[in-house]
Amino acid sequence: MYDVTLAPCAEYEAAACRAALEAVLAPLGGLDWVTPGLRVGIKVNLVAAMKPETAATTHPVLLCELVKLLTARGAEVIVGDSPGGLFTAPFVEHVYHVCGLEAVEACGGRLNRDFSTVEIEYPAARAAKTFTATAWLRDCDAIINFCKLKSHGMMGLSCAAKNLFGTIPGTQKPEYHFRFPDYAQFADMLLDLDDFWAPRLHICDAVLAMEGNGPTAGTPRPMGLVLAAENPHRLDLLAAALVGLSPKDVPTLEAARRRGYLPDSVEALQVSADWRPYVCPDFERIEERSSLQFGGKGRFVSAFLRRCLEARPEADASCIGCAKCAQVCPAKAIEMKNRRPKIDRSRCIRCFCCQEFCPKGAMQVKRPLAARLVSTGKRRKT
Ligand code: SF4
Ligand code: SF4
Image (cartoon, rainbow, N blue to C red):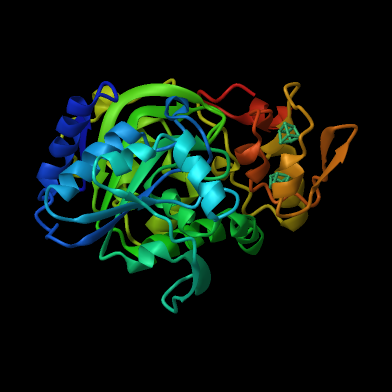
């Protein structure tokens, strides 16, 4: 059995998408586990109301081909997510519309319209022993996690493991950043969500990935790939290698390694095809702090180094003064002054919610000059 399967898919054209999905599913045993009447929930990435061509969300053409494969086997298919913002009918319907998801209902699937939430107790968790979740997935017999490959300000990579954060109701997400301000803790919380929901299958839309200022304001990057796996972390390990990220740059991969979910290196993965020709060495990624090691230097020296070297949010000249960043900041670290966001660095927990939800892509993850001087290798321009 393969750890990860991959297939080329040059464009979002129905026949090409169908062929790519069949090619990634076949080596994993196909969809024989799908029986008539099975209720399958597809958890897509609908981070915000953004058109498919922005590469921020799971593409509807690829999604519809999966829906058709499942309904052809008699499954009842429900597609949904909780984007950043309200988990209410008017808000989410607007996101469905802008993201082109109405196509799901034209091809036999159903969009989720259960906007209730449920309190979950998960004693086996390492970090999130209790959490509030969207209820719709709990009522499904099987879950497919259909993520998008994107760079991510806080976690380095938005792919399979990160996508389950969308099971937390949108308005509560900032609270989770505050509850788990440390990146390793936050990653552990994400792994708890992955373990709890235990999707049957993970599929990644990397036909058009997002590089740069992701996960919402980056640049579409054609990669021409679809990936699949039964284990989200193995999929992410390969995805990270494809975009030139070390596991040390991705806290969820580090957390997965701590839990013994990963082999020592990407080279040890059983992959269905040679992935090396698909590596994008110039993929523009967000330089992150996780590769910077501060341990063993004493508390005050570490704190000083962090202040000097860690990446931080910074608004550029395209800021329109809308104050959205101040509204979403879980640490209340942003104050608007003269229609410009002023960030209190001592309060900032570097969750990058302000960057993720800035409607103009004006909030950027910036690295201080000192960090740029000491870093090596190809990095995102800051
Ligand atoms: S959300 Fe973006 S555009 Fe709006 S005030 Fe903040 S930085 Fe400026
Ligand atoms: S300023 Fe931005 S990065 Fe800092 S805590 Fe607020 S939302 Fe998070």
